[in-house]
Amino acid sequence: MKVTVVPAQVTTVEDRIVGSLGFSQLVLIVSPVFLAAGLFVILPPFMGSAVYKFVIMCVLAFLCCVLAIRIKGKILAAWLIVILRYNLRPKYYLFNKNVTTLREDYPIRHADEKDELPTVANRRSAHPRLSIPETAKVLATIENPASKIRFEAGKKGNLHVRFTEIEE
Image 1 (cartoon, one colour):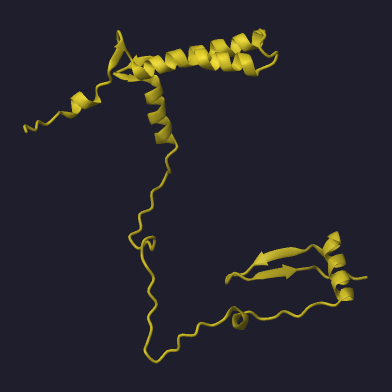
Image 2: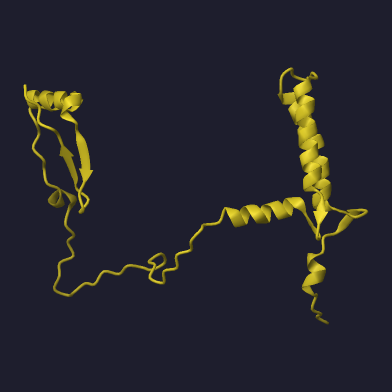
């Protein structure tokens, strides 16, 4: 069997369907017909004519015909996609070789260590519960605008709640 190499220029040429129009141009030119039919059915008055429907249909047809224009071998819709992808890309690319995305984490074990893992109950510390009068007093202090409650995050991830002292 004889194998030949096909140049890249031959495979990238868009087939012409009607005259000098390609498939993507024909789709852009014909799509307003179907979109206009959908708008005609969906928008009120249903299955009836209205001026705003015809304005929307004409604007839609004009936009699709403009996007089907070919410049330098590419249609305007393709140029628009290229420009939008360029403008919507991230501004900065940060390269870091030390990412841990696909690395597996193997813990180091020694032979003399036990296989027991600390339970969740051992790690948590029980916080004392407030009595009902103390809870009511705290809620009243929080709701009082004169107390000026502030929540501040610490450097180690802890949360500090600060009140201003209210004299009664």
